[in-house]
Length: 183
Image (cartoon, rainbow, N blue to C red; front, side, top):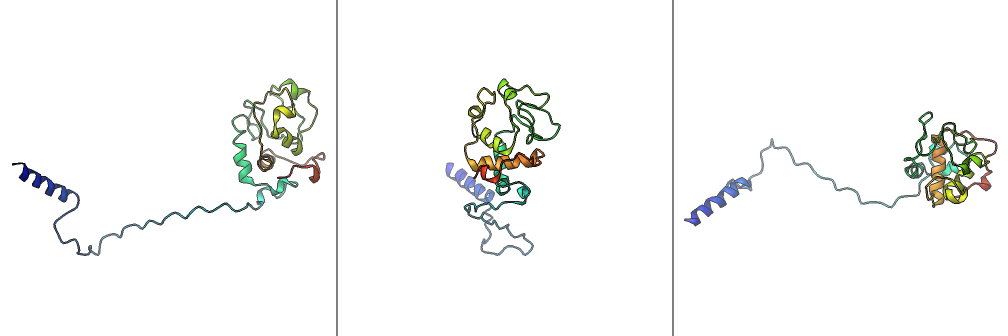
């Protein structure tokens, strides 16, 4: 009794899986839609050196040679504490719009540490490079809990990105190209 039940079950499975018992060597009807062809993804290619983009062309050297994508990507380390849009307010850190050319610790409405309030310099690209290397060592006593940006090319890209995003205009005290950080 089990053999006929097993045979019927096997036939039902074959029919359910598309087996019709018809000659499967017959070509499909002309009205059938051809199957979509899948094009394999190209093999990954090593990234070529990035050419300086037009984004930074107006910036002073060496920032005019920075990588915009690298700067934008590196800013992700900063965006949880800082905003760059004019008038967008402060977060844990001060808004960075208008940073370049501004006296350190002077943004109205932000409570700076004593170390920053007592410091006496104007934010310029070369100061920001030193600050970003290691904020705690550059200005001991500040409250910025950030280890720093270790790679020079990341700092270069980040500073150039900030120059664009924060309304940078050259100031007379900018460091000469020879004193600016090199990638």
